[in-house]
Length: 305
Image (tube, rainbow, N blue to C red):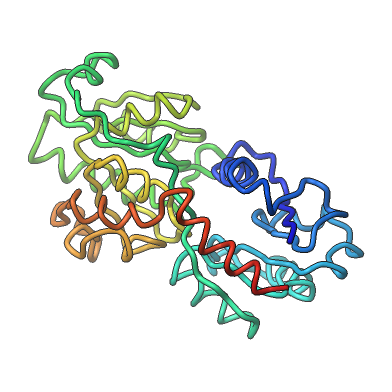
């Protein structure tokens, strides 16, 4: 059995998943599509870069990260069903994504969250030392968000699926009770939140696209990480926070319900009432570490042939 993973080349989390898979599963992987028995469309939006001849001849596994039905127009629908002709089995990264896929196709779906690399994301015991490194004050209450929040075509418009407006509202509400709050942002396209924080005089630090070592350190500086998304596949930040014991609360999206304690999931946008539980999130995230979690994928793939 040989598996070929399509390449997104977007400097996004999927690129990292692809790289980790090839590094750790050399015995069943190939970078030659001609040698492959299975094509894994881990980045399904790039499927047209693969010839229809290869898609027709091989077994095809298609990962669906999430479906935003508010944006699922006729063009999106057409693309889905064009690709669906060649798909043998769908991979959903959360139960919620699986339910979305079921609305569009009767094909088989397996649900497996992506793995979390505990060699990248881990707890750093000396919080004071790390916070000093980034010039955070001892009494700063640090709230983190490390994802995109604006649309790619218009950096002034919020990417509503990510809930940046909800994030700002949550911070403002929390700030009423604690004026030591400082927001820590990282990643591309953070203009919307930065502009909103500036206009409301909420202090923040922005770190651009930093390396994984620095990002893990920032996680370990935080007092709270907030996922405010309306639609998500993961997000992977939930597993990353879980594995390095960063306190996290989240809207009920993606993998939140299988990683977080019920009291850590935001209800009716009441972010101030959600309570992080690092013991539960860490315990659940440990189930998805590598290399053990790869076994679940390998079993699915072997059963395809």
